[in-house]
Image (cartoon, rainbow, N blue to C red; front, side, top):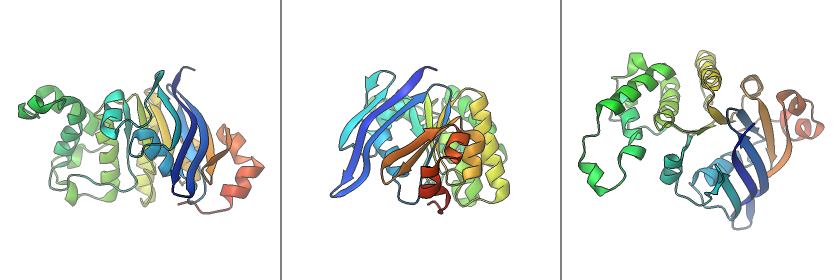
Length: 250
């Protein structure tokens, strides 16, 4: 498989806390990679250090052959790296449709002059409608984001990532706090994206979901990788069982 991203010796320290401590990882085009680990393992911190929310203390993030560590999050999105967040923070006064259109602005607004252009161009609107159908939001597209359920907001997070046409989408616990019905729908959405060849990195505390959708799983504990392999290899790894499978994740 062709490598899309490589992480070398990544460190993220907060004072004396070593949240990520020398992490290495390769992500390949078209694969779905899961990242799991016990509560406080550093999973979301890892996402933030990769995506430009944090500037890593040390190490490299190499995307399509070029170093990108420390690049601001909006520039990472322009390069093709999009992510969702555990806590959905939509533009609550706007409709679902307008939220998705607004997310397309990462490519539309490239300088001060572009702010005077019409945001709702036909191309952007057509793409937004396509993404909204793809994630199952068509029936609530004209509702304000403040008026829909958490399950719809999680799909909106994914839609806002997809509208940027990412080469890599990073999903941070998309099923957390959802009903079983909503979990099944999000799981199917991830499987649909996978079938289309979308490269995905997934943090998910629900192990059955991770085992079902992921080609490969990396296990974090106290900021270090302790295991990596297929779902079955990870499931039966003694170190993983001790560090993770017997505990409740965040």
